[in-house]
Image (cartoon, rainbow, N blue to C red; front, side):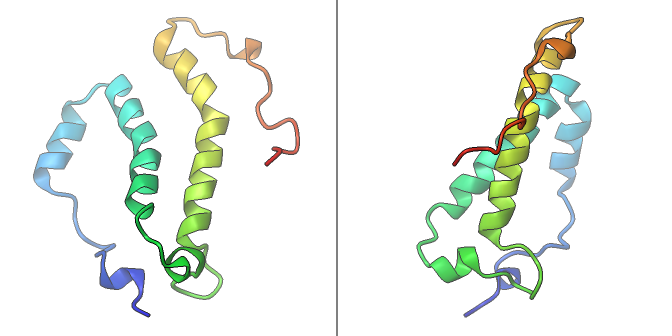
Length: 107
C-alpha cells in the first residue's frame, strides 16, 4: 500500500497566481472560498473506493483522511450560521442564534 505522501507533496509552495488571487479577494470571497474547501476535499476523496486509503492513517496516532473530512464537516456545520449572519448582515446579532451542538449530534 502506498502512502498519501507519495501522491501529494505536502510541503509544496502555493503558486504565485493563487497567492495573488487570495490577496486581491475581499473577506466575503475568502469566506466562500474556505467554505468550498471542505466540499472540494470531500469530492476529491469520493472516488477512492479502497477503504484502506480512507480509513487508515499514514502514521500511527494521526487521524485518517475520513476522520479529517468528518471533523471539517462538523466544524463547518457548527460555524456556518454565525459566518452567514456576519457575511450578510451589517450588524449581525449572534445572540439570537440557537446553540449549535447543544445536543449529542444525533447521527
